[in-house]
Length: 176
Image: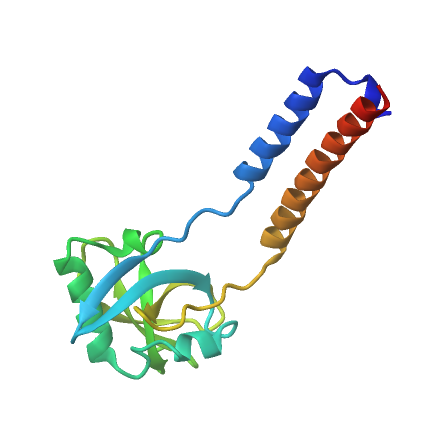
């Protein structure tokens, strides 16, 4: 079936598959390193709610330590960075439960070039929460969501199609 294809359509098919697979790769996460008290934190963010990611937010180094959250925010600003380096717009550093919203999450917030200020967030609403890994420590394993899975399957399909078209051409040459 593939024997009748000329080399140009085959090459075009491969180029299209490769181009689509590259376009479907996930964008790199925004990250910035900040050093406070001799510890380097690689800051990133995740758009989630407290109710959805309790363990993640409570595992952050600043959970229960508002002073550390403020130090990290201030160092980020002193280094010439801002919240847009780790997220889009306002990024919240969750520090504990309480505040003015029943069951709410208290957070130190950095917005653009503004310093930290405290606020209370609804536990079920989605916000950009700061996350960190300590440089040299184990990196967090990203979750595979539906979008990432479909992209991975598409890339695998494109690779399979590329292999199949190459085998068909080799079989046609072997018959000739």
